[in-house]
Length: 305
Image 1 (spheres, rainbow, N blue to C red):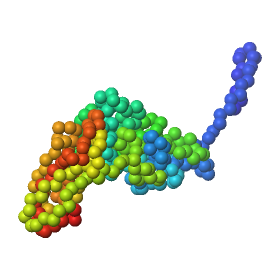
Image 2 (cartoon, one colour):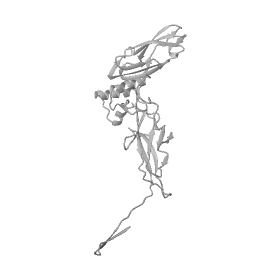
Image 3 (cartoon, rainbow, N blue to C red):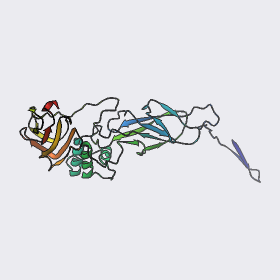
Image 4 (cartoon, rainbow, N blue to C red):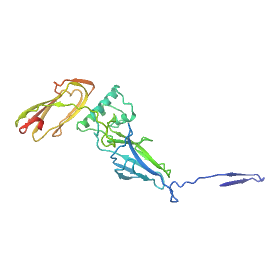
């Protein structure tokens, strides 16, 4: 565009202006629209997270989208928003050791250094990490009613750290939109199942000794649960299953009740226990962690049921 200006005395000047018109919204048709792909990665190591529940674009849901693999065209007018959702599988690799990490953070023994791990630890959305988070995690592990309020996975836009991304709608490129996945309560970020590359289970196995004896119908069975090897223990959890057609659980005693521990025997056929302490506690294999009392409903050998 050329602009010429003249005054009454005959003076004149000329200027040139250039305006680049880009058909970003493809109004004229035929231009290349922007292509978006959405990538959900774990906060600690960048591993792709699998089994995404849904991708919501402009209110339209896409079930089970492929992570980083599928591209979606931008609309021809205006920006739009996208949200990734991953939920379910609450106790996927959430362990009593995660609860211990929270205790350590509160006491200053081993503070959580990442804001993402702190966000994972604040499972009741109180904007602080408290012993209430510890209690709720232990209750969830033990199969008791709990009040964990966050979804199983927090999915954040890595740029704005919200749950939703808004398209700049530039046109003509392929843009990978990064999202961050934070597993609720998994504050040490060792969760593996559901990812493309399974991790390594670093937990140790503790063998528990129970008497393997023969019992007749109506016998009352005292079954002390003991470590196979003496040792110093910081935390542990176990689930013991039994045959409800052959055994009836009468009651149980435990020396762990005075610590951060919880036992749940309300579900028929299952006993769940989670326990932790701030410092390692020596436990000899001669001590009973928990003594179970059963009634034999049929002739049986204890380890068979």
